[in-house]
Image (cartoon, rainbow, N blue to C red; front, top):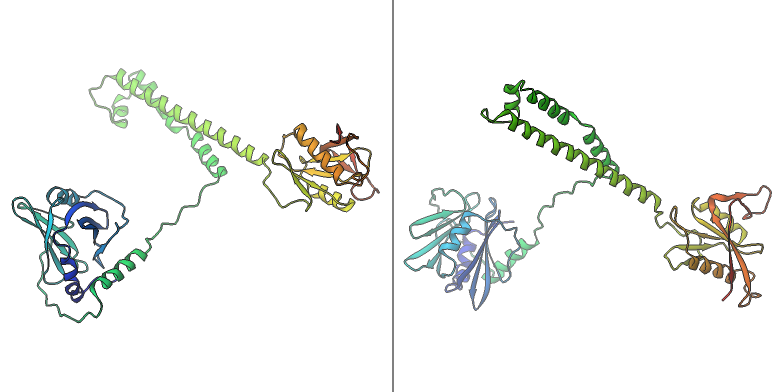
Length: 390
């Protein structure tokens, strides 16, 4: 982004001078520059952006977003300038602006240098001085004035818009480690027992008052420290190391436990069939419309899914998605039983109060019958729910 040239600053000077009489209310600093909050009928914000290649002075009616960081210059400006009014803005040689303030005893001044690679903010008040960077001697230069054919406020707004549209460089986020990677790293850390073994060895030596001239420097212990105090110090370090190892082991157990739970949870996959029912508990039940669909449902089902059928009668098969070691409630079983009857050839003949038996088991306990039509199975371990149509 290009900074203002001398002609543009000369063109903008009347705009800057419209803020004379404004009171400086606050100062914020960041790694990139200084923001000053002025009040004159309404709030205005000056940003002195100290980028080496393109220093800028911008004015906006809203505060500029910046990552705040306290700098010595901020403290100096707050002490000697906040609460005082701006008296004048002057343009010197070579893109240098001077901001004069009225203090209690005498005038104070802020010098703003806006030429590339010489950018600086130098504040002077009550015989003291503070700057953004180490001040360098100004070299006089002749600046040619060129016509600027755009109104000052429009020129400033264009620069502000350009500045606000510049997106900061975002650091690429490091790829997150998987639970397995974290577990592996923790296990490697837990296996490293060198630190504990060394402490145990040094404690044994210190207890016998041996090799003290080697142990004391190793742990940066004072030479006049009694050996028993040094021994207590090493014992405390050993207890901390063992505590860290114990916490790592607990963390590994917790992560492995979470991993097992996740492996047991079946993620929502593509529907096994277009005909399905969402049960009261959130599980999905799928219905086979024909013998071919019944066979296809069984082929796609996980071993722990639930299979259900109206016992002894020609009806569709139902497959219920569920997690391992998860059982269906009585209300869910009645829900799929009634749904089975309503979607079978029994629907027209069945009446309220009729009794039926729901045959159900996990898919792992079903066996295909050789030579039998598609969809027919042998049930190895079945459960039966006797129910009455509502």
